[in-house]
Length: 219
Image 1 (tube, rainbow, N blue to C red):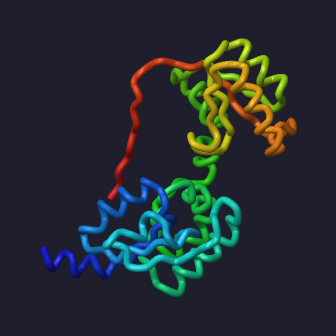
Image 2: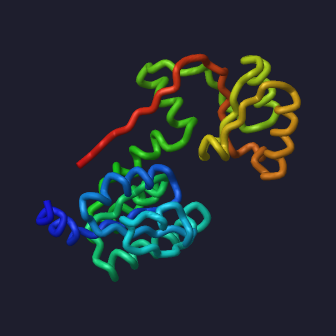
Image 3: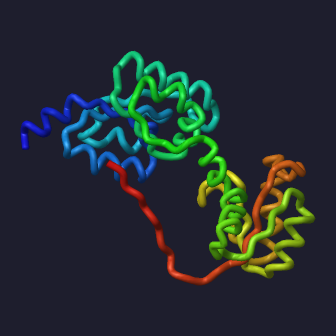
């Protein structure tokens, strides 16, 4: 067992962020195997910092606010520190797929092609793909203006859901249960300048059922 750990310790892994529960699971799985694991994250006090399995934390630009700066930072780290594996812990995988031709000569990385990501990355593209392959989903309408949102909400009745094309459940999904929720959302979207006729949102009817998640594993 000690020989295996010593062998693994020569493999250097860079995690793309250190703040999510996803990365906490990765650290828990990889750490006991003896790998040298580092993290780049804009928050120097991110969740991953407090794991005994983490070797170093590098403070980097925010990938969402400055994707080019973040990517340059990661590439420089890989070149200077000689990492064997770049592990996309979260949405950075989308950026790494775009930069795949620059990354694959430098480091081991497992990401799909950028065109594959584009088909699934946004909520609207994913819903259209489900229609294409004939998989069922809650009834969905697409909207770029407030009039289109109101029309869709009226069609589905409340409660229903309004979702940003990009964004997590905590920052880009709203459950609309009454007109008060709808008016508050309108104010928020106007403040964010989202109701510009260009940004697509989806409106979905609420559905009942059991909550399930699907995880994939690769070695």
